[in-house]
Image (spheres, rainbow, N blue to C red):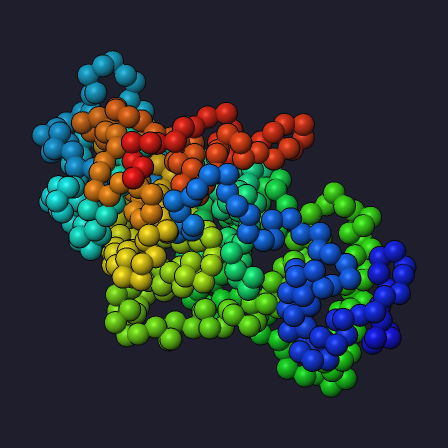
Length: 487
């Protein structure tokens, strides 16, 4: 191939600026420089990317970026943040809500009422009751905004996880992070807009469906980074030289591939997957310049690493991801999901068998890192425009499953927010005396999504995408902004 010209999709021969860039930078570095030139209007063929650069939101945002901490499996409210003295009074008795309601469990027969095996104490000026499983987060309750009466439409993990992440019970819909990427684009040229940091033990229920782009352009799907792996992103570093495969020959091959891709894209303009693949290659090239520094946690001070629990085997994994989440948002990533717990019957918050032994183990792995993340964000001034969201897919039953386990419960659960745009030290809503059902000021995943979009400067009713003849949105036909918690 002529190194000073190339054939565009229409068949015309045009001068190639990229040939110079290839020879100057070599390999994927050439893609990085060429892509940056293209975005400034210097390339001969404009990019067909969608959502590739920052877009102004419809109204002034309070939040620029979000860190979502997802407790996979259904964290128990009455054993963490929702103290219920009635459970202590009724402990060991048959559960009877007193209104004639039929009492059922998701996967078992209802057992006897069980009090929390963990002592609760009040903390902070707000007086929030917190279980002993969260001694470190308890010190931050005056920074948190609690949603105490959330409800799910299901008590099955897969649909509930989809509901919390995509707003729908079924697969195939875009995730919250994908909607944010689609609506606002990226703030950083050399890092993804939406990053997912899964548990080292495995992906959650629904696997990648929780952070897919659904019917949005594929480029808006979450980029999975395995923080504990030797290579957090496979093939990020270019391979070494291999005989005849020189920088020049590789550049010419990639130039030909680019031309073929352009032709194919012209023939399949309705399919976003090719655009997403091309953009992922160009992003990978740019990440070669920025990602090694971003992922190198040894650059952090010993005190910061200690703050996030990296020195303790019990907290090191989740702490590493919390620290990486801070480094990512600090460098312009808009939306980061940090997962605690893999899919399956163990190694998560799905405490069916024995909550006395299961809950403390998973709780201790996250408690210090979450407290450290909040402290770190506050110290760096990042909480002024960053929102941290603690979430799970549903709650647990007030009665036993087996001897000391708790079954699924979509009737009520809780979450909290901290940082930009929300009132600190307040609680919205209340569950009934047993944490069986939401009782007052109920909120749904639709309400949470509407509120998060609002804080990002977006109207959940106007953020739509035409798909199969319908204007789809994250909140479907539901949801309202929870204005009571807004600062």
